[in-house]
Image 1 (cartoon, helix red, strand yellow):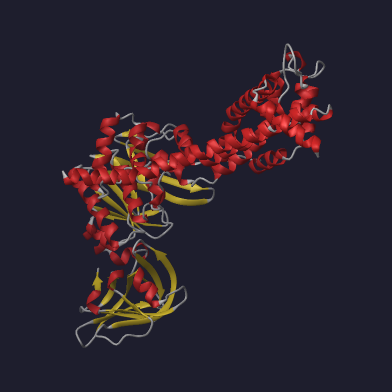
Image 2 (image 1 turned 90 degrees about the vertical axis):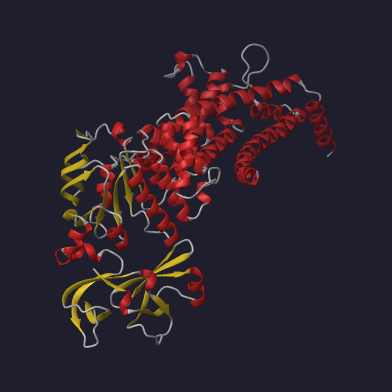
Length: 253
Length: 352
């Protein structure tokens, strides 16, 4: 019990002292997962739009396939990626194994099913008349699709957020293709892999510090998104009374 | 001048033919009403004229040029459709109305001015910042009309523009339709179920039945040939056809079928079409003793919630549409399948 207390105390000391090792790992985690999400959004959003808005044979199978992939054990995906990136593998010539590139691509692939599944259902829940409506107002097909996407924006943000949460908290893929390398040269250690290693070598203070920071970061990012969206509503809602007030003043004059 | 023309236009979904060799000319500056039962192809014609639906066969010309349906982006800027079911973007009223102007790259200042003017026209001044989804159904439909009007397209297409509106909102919209047609010379094609609208607003009426246009002419011409196009007229609320017999008391009784005989304050004989305004019908839970000559008992088969009103369909052997206030609806404690009576005066029955 005393050990846990002293480890926790040490964790807070590490966090508050701005320990460069810890914050190096944290910033690397944020950078890798952030880049992975951007990558996943770049290919996942058009894919979601295509699946949700086009009618084609095998649409249900594709949707079920992505839903199934959400449950794919990360070590299985890690293994597939490891074999692909390893020297003898089909993508071995890229020399990506145990580099940040492998982590970012791995995380992006890992979160794509989440992004696509939630994204597709968000877009499909938009009133189908929106597409026609935009077109009757003069929109081209792509402009009308953007109008639909805007209507689904809440669900899209949710899918991006869920994907980021999954990516930054990911261990299996990152460990297998990144290797948790620290020190000089290429560094691939992120929060989750460092926690796993610290526990193995009984560095509980460091592990607890990283654990606390991981939860805090997730909470902060989710909070920022919620507040940003709420803020938008607050601004939107605040406008009418002010506008009414202004009109009343104008009328008096 | 002819704004648009359909020549032998056919539309089929698989084996189902929705439009069958339709020929129709739309003259510049006119209001043309499409009148016909549900599924007669009115909406499909409007969608083809809005260039969001491709015909399966035939030819469409717009402003003298043949429309190639593979590339309709340009012509679509000149024609706009307001749907029966109101759809608004989940954003402010301003963004809704400005959407089409933004697509046309209209500068912001002009955009603001035009949005303001359009809102004044539909009597929604100062609604710019309101969330469009939080407006009442009638207000949303007015936003939809303003959103179409602001584009000043050559062709304005309206699909049952007042079908789900209370009389106040419907009245505002009818006024707007009339104003933009007269003042801005906008050509309008509208599908309608409303007998008052069909008689009052359009310059010409095209009667439709089973994907075909059966008659085109001025309201006087078309209503003059009632018996020939009974099916199309039967689609209009509270419009019935039957055989009239004069009574000794100076009125007539029209047998509209299923044992329903409606007394009319006019001497009529033979085939007759009649119309009763839904607002002229009194609804009660028991038979009311009054001077009104027409009392029928039946069941409520459909309830539609309008803004401040409730539209009910009462089957008394023939379906009648009745409009009552929400307050009366609640006070009477009405529900589906409730037994009710409808009462109206012989003089409320209009002979067409």
